[in-house]
Length: 196
Ligand code: GLN
Image (tube, rainbow, N blue to C red; front, side, top):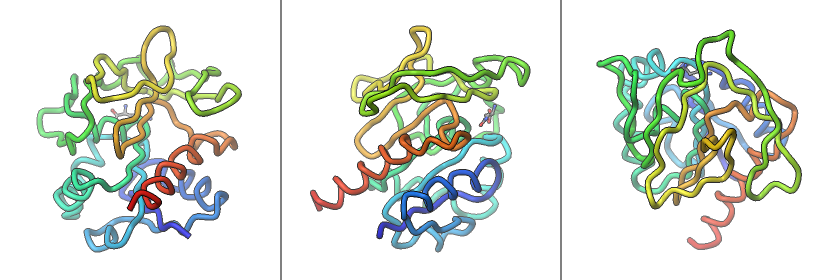
């Protein structure tokens, strides 16, 4: 059974843990650097990327996590989690850090404020039928590097992307009962362990 960490400093981590447990994964909440030891994958949830950035630094998790992801740890980032993975973040607070491991440019709150939150059904590469995507003060993906695959698009804008060891979405796949997006992440974990 793979062990998947869920960054549990702030934000929607409980919902991610619930989805993963439904898929028979051992889930570990990550709050301290040693919680990262021996993980097969990690989820960076939605929430508030400014707050998460501060807590990542004060907990000492930031440097170790960044190194592990750069070394190939399978990682799923959603909404604020995507912001924390992006190489380029626009409209960020000046003191906000990012692991800078995913070749995309994102703009914080690019879809507007809380009242502009919405949900919509989108086609996702790898899923046979549409997936209901929930957007809450979501970042907009403004640029995607050449090594990054676009898995889903909404109104002409990428909303789910993947690179070698990273799966990321500007929406919240953990906020519906549909666990297929998490399943895609688990497929990445199992194919990586087969290659190893
Ligand atoms: N707007 C939040 C941020 O910039 C992200 C919102 C979310 O994760 N739902 O961190």
